[in-house]
Structures are given as C-alpha cells and as structure tokens.
Amino acid sequence: MEFKEFSERLLVIIKSMLPEGYEAKLKTVHKNNNQKREALIISNGSSSMAPSIYLELYYNSLIKGREMNDIAKEIISIALNNRSGEDVVSQISDPSTMSSKIVFRLINSTLNKVRLSEVPHIIIENMAKVYFIVLDINVDGVSSIMITNELLSLWNMSPEKLDALSNINTPKLFPSIIKNMNECICDILSDQKEELTIEEDEHFEEFLNDYIMDMSSRENERMYVLSNTKGINGAGAILYPNVLQELASKLNSDLYILPSSIHEVILLPARDRMSSRALRDMVIDVNSSQVAPEEVLSNEIYYYDLSTDEFHKVKDIR
Image 1 (spheres, rainbow, N blue to C red):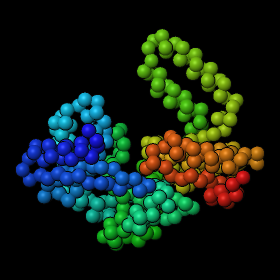
Image 2 (image 1 turned 180 degrees about the vertical axis):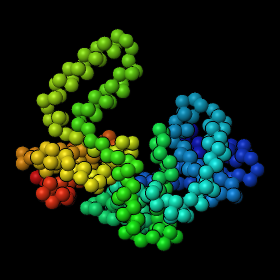
Image 3 (image 1 turned 60 degrees about the horizontal axis):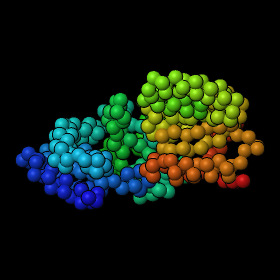
C-alpha cells in the first residue's frame, strides 16, 4: 500500500470511530526549509487549535504488520486527550503571559523565503533569526509555536522588543553547552554500550579506552560542538553573549563555525594552513548525506573574529 492510499484509508476509518462533534481531515504541513509533511488533524467546534499528527511513522508501522484499526485508535486517543487547545489560544493572546517564553532560533533564509514573509525575523548572513513561544519543555522535547506577523500585531509589540525579550529568555531556557568533539563521540559510543552483551561489553571497554587515548593527540581534540542543553535548535547559541568569545579567548584563536544542522555547530580554531574550501565541502557533504532536509541550517562556513567579537560568512573560499 502506498503512503497516499494509507493516509486516505486511515482518514475514513478514523472518521467512522470519532465521537459526535469531532471531525478529521488530512493537511499538508509546511515545515522548516520548505519541507512538507502529511498530517492528520482531529478537532471539535469548541477549539480553534488541534495537534498535527504526522503519519510517516504510522505508515512504517503498518508496513511492519500493525493493524490499521490499531493505528486509528491510537491517533484518536492522542487527539482526544489533547485538552490544552483552548488554554493555549487564550494564553498566547496575552503578551504579558508569554513575554518570558519568547525565544529565538536560527534557520536558513533562502530555503524559508516564503515562510519569512509571514513572520518577524532578522537576516544574519544567509540565516534568519526567527521567534517562537515555548509552551512546554520536558524529557520528550520542546513544544512551541512560531510567532507570526499577525500575532505580533495582536500583541501590539514592536519587532525590537520581541528581539530583546528573546535575547534574554533563550540563554535562560536553553543554556549553551560546548563539548570537545571527542567527548561527543564517546557519549555516542557509551550510549551504544548499553545494548551490548556482557562479552561484547568487555571488548568495548578496551576499545573505548584505546580510542580516548588515541584521539587525545589528534585533530578532533581541537574541534568543539556548540549546542544547548536540550540539543534541540541549538545552533542559535552562536548568538549568545560571550559564548564564542570565551572559547576563542581560551584557544587564543579566531574560530571557524561549521553549521552541522539547526541543532548544533562545530567550532574549530582558524589556522592559515586550513583550507576553507575543504571545510565548506565537508559541510555540504554532511548536509546532503547525514542531515534531514528540514534540519539543514546552511551550506556555508563562517569566521569568528575575536578582535571584533563578530562572525561573517567566508566569501573567499580557497
């Protein structure tokens, strides 16, 4: 069964199961970088807001043998247990309630040209600083709503005040974290360790210890990953006060900034012998092969100048 047929058949089944007063519909949701995802929305007349339930994972579970009726029941349960729609509408209408929850994120400006026409933003090189209301932060992730020009007008708030509030809130709600590249690799390897048998675990410990000793003298030791403590939309941490400056001062060097995704960037000391072309080619390769299309931030690289405490896109690629 193709995805389109699955979506349409699922919609028919869900409509037949819904309580009176509820309706369901399919909707194409426009995500970051002009990516589109198919979602199912279940709502009733008393709320103007309803969650978008994305169907790709459910389609994959159908392929693996899950029953369509079972999928329909789970989706209905999720939708009917979402009681927060009315509260959210009333809350976001009040800027005094929302002012401490306004944050910023960085996205690609070119790939989001249409979206940017509808939201307040600031262009930074080939990126755009956009704004969100954080509704909830929990172990599963972050629930948020993008701030539109319409909402800003409803609040009667200036773009300058919006930006100032986001600059205060974002580092507080999502503190920055910088890890050496080796630490990040070891964290990933350690997570995989939990899935090993006892015998495999003994060999893994030896490998991990050897890896740590081997890498300590290699180039990875000079590469750093910057994100936030949630690891979600953390690339914006390059705009936090003093973050780049403190690392550059510690290393006594300007920095190259490699945007590995909207979630994090890689920082490394700038040296004359380093090829900016090789660095940019690496970013392009990773974006095309390892990063989901909606999570790509930029195919460019950036240079942070410690003397001016500013960064810019590298134009002289050599």
